[in-house]
Length: 526
Image 1 (tube, helix red, strand yellow):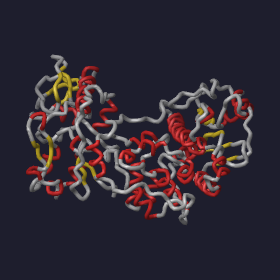
Image 2: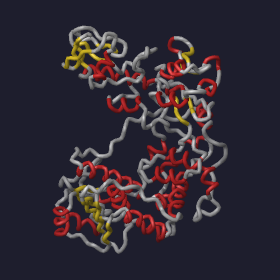
Image 3: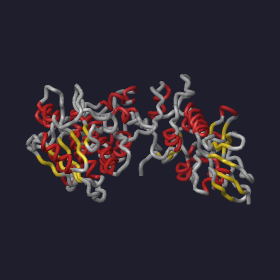
Image 4: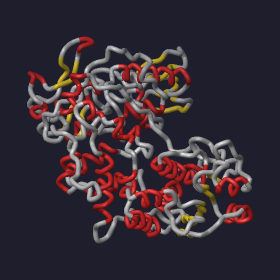
């Protein structure tokens, strides 16, 4: 049984064991996208590179078997760089977005395509839960948001943008109109208490997401009712008062205590800082022309020409346990932006209360390929339906159930279905990959094969690892998946020009689960 060292740890493994398996069996991870234990591989993604410490040479750990007295290093700057380079090369041929342009443009970063898929299937409650992961007041903001997401919608290249805001509004209204509006399950009580000063969009959103994490929020507001600037929209006729009141009441039902007509002066602020585990300042505009400016200026916080000085991503102020967000930091024209910042501040406060480094909400690597080419519009319309944007007969009433399903079906689904479990994405994030390192302006045209009841195949996301070929061979699919072509032109597909449903008759689920990217993914969400 060969004896070797991996990261200065002596290990004994059976002869014939690959280096990658030897490392993993001894608790040392080596990343890979193409390797399956005990199976021969067709190609190497080169992500599993390691170093021979004796020679300094790098080699793929999936293809070399252990030898006596080997001395392997699985991670150092040179290994990191080699894996980073391998990812850059894979990304140079990858044509696909991780997140859709609409989601990237949404200030709250809502997963709009997933909401649309669920609404199109009539899964209204599931759609609401997706919306409220990022937007605490969907019925409110479905009425007042100026919809920057619709400006980025690729459906505009065909006719008109999908009516995203009205769809979001329906999800919120459908829930409020039910006998028992949905209350998400709250985490176990942490015993931590947070004071939130200001019950506008930012403060309310922060309270919602902090309550969900098990922290107790006390919200103070100098006005006679919570909602802050949102009441201006009520007065303008855009927003019925009962909708705002009802959605705020759901935050209170989660356990948040809201204290209206409570002025926080300098002395009270100092007492709050001492009493609470964390404090969030969300008082609204703090510019010198606003009456709130004088109130916050005496709180010992560092000020700028716009408002309170806070770190851009984490919202931490000069007082470590005090955070500042929204228009208290910089006047914001969009209420949806301050709402999104409230959610992000809640993430930072939770990090602080958990004793973690306060770095703010993480944003993963995001593949982007830009505008659709004319021939690609046809490909993306395969997942959509013909027909111009649906307009409700009465804007105050909004969409009917049937209109919601029809309008949501117009979405072209520019996102990746494997967004949460794509190895290419997670590794690109970990190794700080650069998609444009080897990028060519003359990129490949993306294709979508929709020839299966629940699987979609996008060849331009495929890294040609051959895992699907292995699986279909093992289970003796009649056609299965195969390498087609030669050299640089090789692709994976169903042989003899057969459709995908002929290639995947037995193991479609397993193939989708095993695909390291979003090349093979489920069409539906059930």
